[in-house]
Each structure stands twice: as C-alpha cells, then as structure tokens.
Image (cartoon, rainbow, N blue to C red):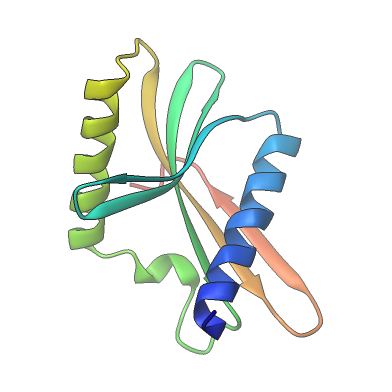
Length: 116
C-alpha cells in the first residue's frame, strides 16, 4: 500500500473511533456514488451527517481541510443526494470535516461541523 493511502486509512480509522466515542452512530464508511466517495456517514442529534476526513503528515502545504475545493464539495453534495434517494430521511443534513495531522510526535484532530 502506498504511503499516502496508509496515511489516509489511518486518518479515517482515527476519525471513526473519535466520532463513535463522541456519540455518533456510524451508518456507512467509504460509501461511493458515481465519482464521489463519502468517508463516513453518521447520525447524531437528529442530523444525518456526511463527513469528509482529510489527513496529512504536516501543515507544510496548508491545513488538511484546505484541500477540499468547490469541485469536491459539488461531488460530495451529489453523493449525499444519491444516498438520501436510496435511504430517505427526515433528519436534517449536515456536512462535516474531520481534519487530522499525524505528526511524528503528536496527532492533531479537529472536527469541523457544518463545514460546507
């Protein structure tokens, strides 16, 4: 497995564990729709939450969440609509980001609700 793939997988596992610890009910991981993948789909407090996990090894090239551009957001929202078509819900919809930097000495985790 390529180093960047391992880093991404490690970040998604960390996000999964943190979200579970914080009371999120995880419905799906790595859910795909056409050209988009939603890392984590969860429920909490009346919200259906689509969560993008971004992981980096440093801030050298900016914060992980800065890598989410308008095109990615558009694909992500299309995928969310696809999910809701397959699994209708009355829950409110929210898009979150979990930003993770796995450094040599520490790991920084930031959960950003209503990110876009």
